[in-house]
Amino acid sequence: MLSTVRFRIPKAAADALHLRHVKRRARQASVTDVRFDVDERRSSSVEVKVTCSIAMAIFLVGELRAVGERAKAKRDTALDNACSQAVSSAFKAIDELDKASITNSPSKDAPASA
Image (cartoon, rainbow, N blue to C red; front, side):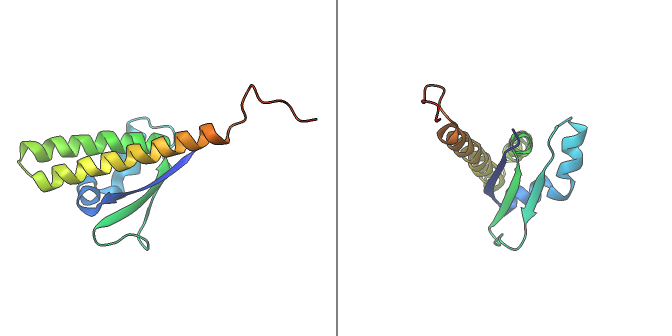
């Protein structure tokens, strides 16, 4: 099942990730579903709207954590906080999609309609 998640991340975190190159890095990391888009029209000067596959969202979480760790080592608390917020947004979007798929899936115990 291919699923798409949508979430917003702080622009500071998006800029630090160099989103232009994220698909290439994901392919190099053997991510199987590299669907990824940034909606420039619906993004603000503070946040960026991301639409991607679950596999890419998970890849982005890893990338964001790495950027956050580098920011923490440099004592850049603003970037570290932006990365933490982006990770939370990605996990929340994945969790909401998971809950929606459970709610929308037919139950094995439900009676079959004739």
